[in-house]
Image (cartoon, rainbow, N blue to C red; front, side, top):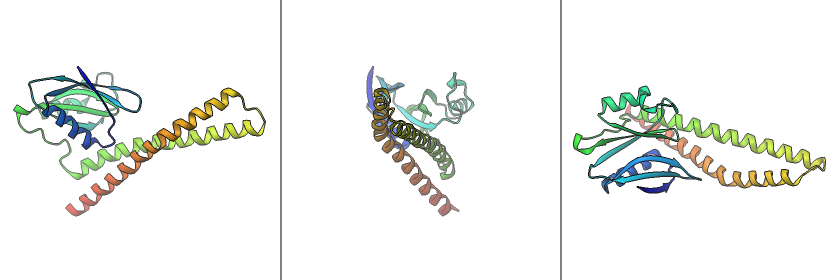
Length: 192
């Protein structure tokens, strides 16, 4: 089993990479989590596959394979469920069975999926900004009352460093998702 550590902000690019790996004879078996990255585990295979990725409509459920949407895709597309990770569901279909069409065949459904991603990214970003303000208030109050302990100072420094690392990633996700939604909205207007 081989492990590749990557992080994708764009689901289309992730899907493209998985299909490139499949063309090399690598089959995705599971996805784990690391620090700032996901761990993609592959095994060698003689069967060629096409992969499709979708944002989860059902959320994280204990038995992902029985979720209604997963059952719909696996039965209607003659596909296999691979795994659920980070709000996304991964499917594959043997190339010998024919073309595995994109799960989103029209701009409206692609827009809806991107909107779900945007909502998730925006809520995490806003929560993080709230935490920054709250920690700033605590530190400011402790500083004004001359009660800054070493533990509080270390905690604030670690939180600040974490914010400097995570905030650009979160903002990049929100902005990228908003741009994609704008492009898809324009495409929907052109088609009408």
